Length: 277
Ligand code: ARG
Image (tube, rainbow, N blue to C red):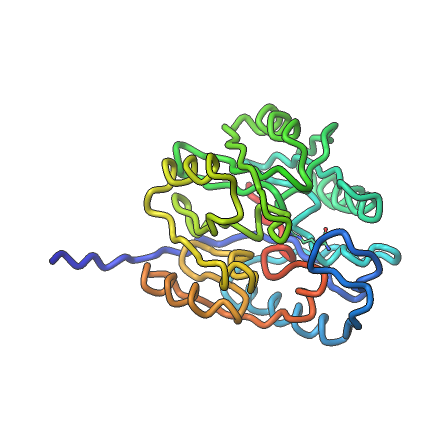
């Protein structure tokens, strides 16, 4: 028996987050949202702050967006853009309720001097786009079926000059790609096959034969909605089996509790946009 001791190497990241000071469930645009469920905003802020601290303690840089009145979902900062190689492909939200968030993200990037490309097609940024930087020279994985329009996949490919693989999401509980799949390092991913069409499952199995595969329990606990620096995997504390699988694969799971933000239909990854230079 050959025992391979996988040494996972972390890489410093730059992230963008937005405090849930204005977080509320005032409308329901995904199956997790229920306007009759009370939200404890103070608790949401506390849990979110622990997440931010966790990233900072791991050595990462976290930029902050200012929360705006009337935009209760702004805490889900992943949806505001998709950034690869220093190029920012802007978001265009599916629902009117979130449309104004795109301008807040755009203003942030323009102020910081990033190259910003405004979209014509509906897309929800990193909610539906993931990047695996060393897979086949740099591969974009893109979800469609609920939020992002497939036309935006082609637009992103032209904006970023990276191949975009379109994946069909078929279960409304996994309405964004980032609740069903995540990059865990520069070459590999973790995903829940049941969120995807059979054809898309085959595509994923072909491209990522060594992927970590999650089960429905962990997926429904928002386990896939994670952020990894290549070694430390920050994920929802309820996804315990997934944490074990990641540990067995040589990663270090870093569980965080984000129960309040599940009420809006999101967890770790939804709260974090990665700024890739
Ligand atoms: N309530 C938000 C929506 O439905 C949640 C977004 C979660 N974000 C994510 N990246 N999956 O749009």
